[in-house]
Length: 356
Image 1: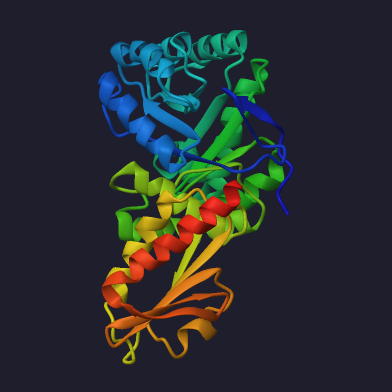
Image 2: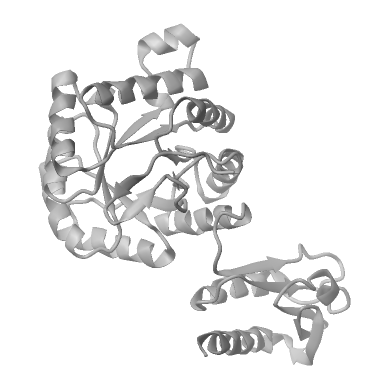
């Protein structure tokens, strides 16, 4: 059951209020490199990114947002650290939302200057706090970085902005400690109805980052907490989108696309199943089919039975394989080298039938 948070508009998208959980990523180009940044955002959009964040450390970066906004199709969030003037400039140049930590952009007068512009332009503010930015007094109060400290820090910042008369807010509290991060989200979900942007910060490389993110986001999202998510990985941000889709789909929070299942291999396997499964996983991205399950199995004897719930499947043994639908074999004796193509033809037929 999704937590009932208030609805916030970001560009042409709505988050919170029971709206679908949106997937976010962040560019790793220099925002001043307009061409490179646009190209990366377009790649991310094609992969399924629904909100993009760009760092704005300089006035040149802020000014670049004007041209970037003209050539992208998803809302843009400006990420600001330390300089309140960058936040104001980013909004003036088209940012759909800004991300700030009010504690590191100066005194209340500077926070007010940012809030005044956001209020005038009706631009939401994401209040971001992470374990590395916890205030000294909270570290002393709680004896170090804790979930309780993260929540108190975030709500202090929220109240600061509320006192300035603005409530178009999104909250983000992140930690690289998975269980601490999960606990912090449980606590804050009980104390506020603002939408929450969820992620495990500094999760790591493609391997370790995916595991930490899947565990952490799985715990949080399963409790109905979270309105936007980011899988933070050290690598190509397109991989973040793929992982986020997989996490949401596994939890039943995203419908669509082709789901590939494959057996883990064993001593009975007599084809190059690992290579074949990876090829299938890449190939299915080409097809605009929703809620289809494809199985890649290494045993022609047990494969169709074990994967009888799959809409389509292939299984191989001794250099040849079979094609099956819903556990029923429809073609035998397919050379191993032709299994991928046989599956492709069946997917093409499915795609054609869906269009008719």
